[in-house]
Image (tube, rainbow, N blue to C red; front, side, top):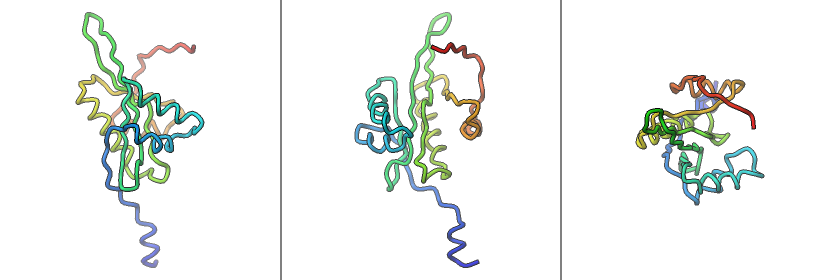
Length: 153
């Protein structure tokens, strides 16, 4: 095996990234992360303008590598009071950067962001057929809860 072959087989080191809140200047980069470009601009602008939604982006010298979309819900509790729940509505890492633990960095930042805002829990909805995403969240400590009732509109 040559030195070149050894270099090619070595896993890529995770890039030096920081996670920060997104702003209007990140709109184009976030749009580029989403699957459906026809509706992506409209969706990203709605997220950025919504008071209950926060976008965290993972950024390196290569630009924005991923985004976590956090939606905060405040619901009343029986007997008074309220609870704050943060839902990870979307978590996307740029396709060429996947497998480098950027998603874990984003998720850890989302959980920390939620704790700093005194959320009682962080939720994520993942379809039963999306096994890879389920494994990702479960490996982080998320657990399945079945107390939600749903009615199709």
